[in-house]
Each structure stands twice: as structure tokens, then as C-alpha cells.
Image (cartoon, rainbow, N blue to C red; front, side, top):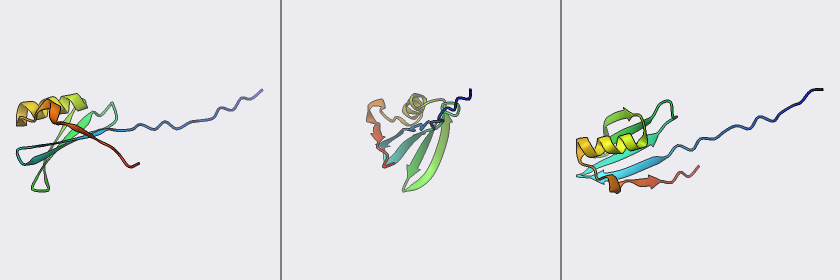
Amino acid sequence: MIFLTEVVPTVSIMKCYESEHLGRLFKIQEDLPAVGAYLFIYEGGKDMYDYLQNSVIHCMEFAAEEFGVPMDSWSELISDE
């Protein structure tokens, strides 16, 4: 007897966060768990810096320590997809 199983693709929703502080826009883009999360820093509409951290919370902590971004200033962005 042969059993066929349906393969159901898994969809991973990766979260994004945003904060503005001292004239800069800070964005966090979650990646696959094995990768971590990216912190992007924009100034005057230009991508100035990007940092890879282990997780979203690590990005937020890094932004707080290095740039003074308040931990409670982050807003989750809702994807249209």
C-alpha cells in the first residue's frame, strides 16, 4: 500500500519594526532564525548603516546602546502581503 502525503509549504512571516530618533529613521527587518535580524539606519532618506544581530530584540538593544533609541519607541510595520 502506498500513502501519499500532501506537502504543505510553510510560510514564515518576518516582522519589521520602525523608530525615528534624532532625525534618523531606524528599521529592523527580521530574517530567518538562523540568520537573525538587520538594523538599518537612514539619514536624509539614505541608507547610512546596517548591522546584523542575532534577533529583533538584540537590534533594539544595540540601537538603544549605540544611538540612544528608546526601547519603547518601536512600532511594528504591517505587511500588505
